[in-house]
Length: 387
Image (cartoon, rainbow, N blue to C red; front, top):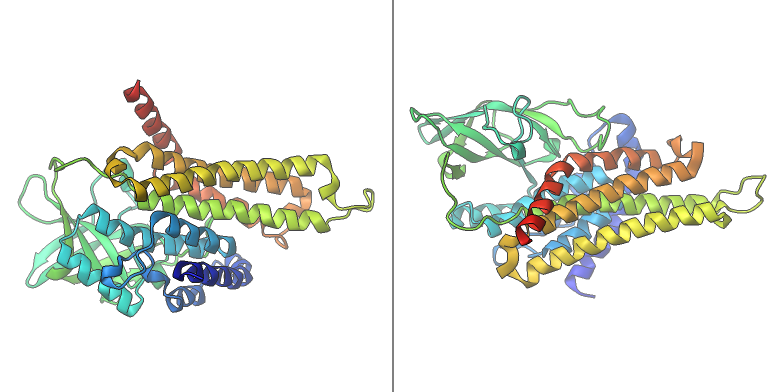
């Protein structure tokens, strides 16, 4: 057994544990601190960190396989890890941080088993993928900066050790720069609001708001500066790591829905029928449709991830491919969970089955970037340019 096969085996065991806890946390809207502890104990925070820094150096496809399997057990926890691993995977590809800060941060994550996520969205601004600049501010002071502001949708917020926070750097310039700051969550003035637990989807993901009140960040953890109107120095890389991470989580939800429906259908024997509903042609057609939908999405995701690894010279031209993978996987989850719910009949609405939770959780995938309208525009633009 290879090292990565051992990682996948551990993920299968974690998914089993997460599954046993998922309904309880979904009903209560509680955060699964025990799941976060299990992720750390399994060493998964180092998954996509390069080997040179002590990590596992997982490829895009390997990351996707891990997240898929974890999502079979609990999508909320899988999404929390997805946020962490895609950020760290992209760090070395994007080269947005100084190399010495990348190394220091990665080594600290490995040695301490830290969990991190970014905090970019804000209540007034919405998603930064649609443009807009942060109202969160970073004021220069002796030895560092003082951060003030409020961020939205910070997934896994209760368990995070560092929050990579975007903020407008206060200055006299007409167009101030935007900085990214690695904020230690234990710093005085950092507060997580418990305002996510009754959401429609992913109730246990802790995707809460985080408030920064006069939070001091040392100058060494000012890790990135984004200057307004600055022209890129070369071709922009697509958001490969985030697109694959999101795609994998929601593909895993769809796969779990199919597995659960098949298990239910095999043991569902209506008295009027006298045999399992898997004997009905309409049930078999529904299962076939679910399987086909997932196969198509899975194939595109895997082939896109493999191309990124095998043909690095093509990476800057793969934006449409990653938009397609994310679109297909998230929509596959939406389609399959709805079909599973319909095929189960009224029993599908009963919380004794996880189908209604899968149905709700899958809808969150439509809101991750690139959202469907933008993904289709990206793909359409590629077709037009190629013609």
